Length: 195
Image 1 (cartoon, helix red, strand yellow):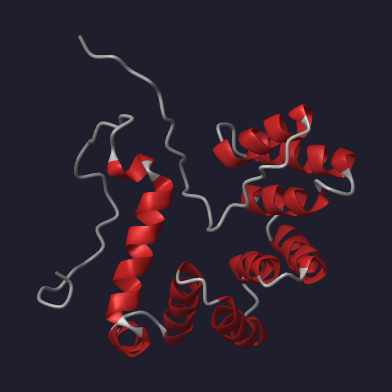
Image 2 (spheres, one colour):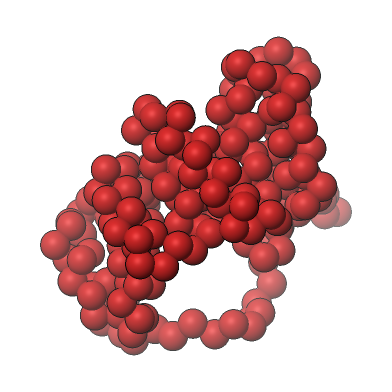
């Protein structure tokens, strides 16, 4: 649709929708796989062209391109772009995403450093506390627990952090790293039965 029509972001609520167990968006793995297939079909050249034509400032366009590469599991490309951006304008979320790239590229030491930089730049970034805790889970459960409590204190209802606390308490190791920045207001999922 975006290739045929012009789109514009409108920062207001225009509709209300109902969440239920059968929503496609509740099948998170299926949704991610579908998004990845679409991006792969579009291809790198077309994606770069589309982002290049966007009406954002150059910094935001490159940051967007890096996030798209992350969604495509192309962490090396994303990291390289974000490292350049961090040299120009060190934004708190650049550090967060560089932490994620480092984590997925198998460099937990660099991930710790980037998440700590993110927290120093924005002490209310709950997702950086959660992801830092994921790295500490195996070696320092006490620090991990404190970081997760901090994440939940900053963002009550933050599902990844709540899940990780449960995993930590039960001795399980199915931790959830938060892949992108949290929305300004988190959606609460409730099981509501309609009669």
